[in-house]
Length: 520
View (cartoon, rainbow, N blue to C red):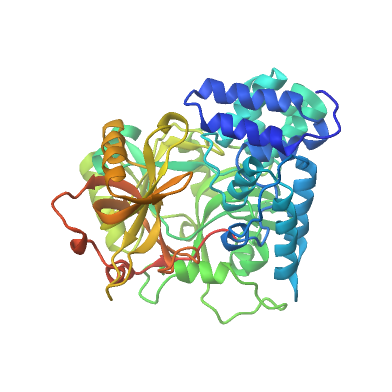
């Protein structure tokens, strides 16, 4: 690496803009690698995080309203990535009376020193909506190219050391040999394996193959539990530690007669009739601390596990699911294991799915029997199926696309009708579910409905009705209706419906089971 006085933020902002302007995965990888080669080794974790579209700080306390009030951009770039990281770290550490005002001052000072391109980058990093077409997987590819090491080594180290930034630090400090020495460490969170999606039972069966292990899908909080002697540590899907918030689960795992364990599962609450509580009930418990004595009259939580990653010195990540399941069945009591069964036919899978939904579960996860634990990846070896919600909503604006979608109006602003006759009420955005043909049509059509535009967005007369599929709702302070759609995607445009036939906010809220808003 070239030793420098510190990388300028404009270098990362320029790379981000270039990545957004190209459709080529290879070009994005090369852009990332070039930035990493030019960087200072001391800043590797910051630069890697920014190229992946995130801040190093998990929480900063900075909301969209704060960054939307950014001052006029600077003419010349003076910011370094180290200065920016220090500013965000300062905001993350603020607390108590006056902290909101001080946080706003720090943000105003930071954005005031940023150019227009740098402000766009900073806003995207804070909001988590940096649309540059580069994901963490591509940053891993860039690291491998920049340092001339195997991509597989980078990926595995990132999975087992909890992040790509951590793997980058190991690589910079010790090279390939150090990277290859990274292994599962009991007490350090592992990036969890994630499931791909299928719209129905037939599609899931086709993707996974049968026979397959079929787990009930729990609508709780994903939790990874590490037991090292008398020490219990628990991590969420995003690897935030929540051990102190789950005393019941901690006590259950502590009582197991094994020295070291790493379990993957969910925690959730149940209703008196035995059916799972809504996610909102579970989240409200895991989102608050208990008193010092560990006592609480709040809804008790139970842990259910679906994978075993380590047992008494033996790592099981690379073992097939059949072996991990066999061992887990031997070491855990039945009441700690998620409801599951092996299905050999599509008819069996259909019956299990129907039964799970009827019993109040979110759906099922279909798992290939020979699959290892693909930590940190959304792998087709696990396929989730959930009942699908749909709404007919109004398109009130659309944003110009990036990368492969350059020149098309892509990201839709979705709104429900106000039941009291006011302006449409925005519920979120989506760019998913669109074919090239659909993108071409809507780009032409939306410009006919244009009322105004800015650099990124074309605002429309609210006349177009689109059918949207989504997985549920979450609370949101960003949108005026107080809720946002989860995992929304376009099914089709309803040219047979007029704007006054779109669904109202009352219809949306009647769906219930609203999840808490993630993040800050």
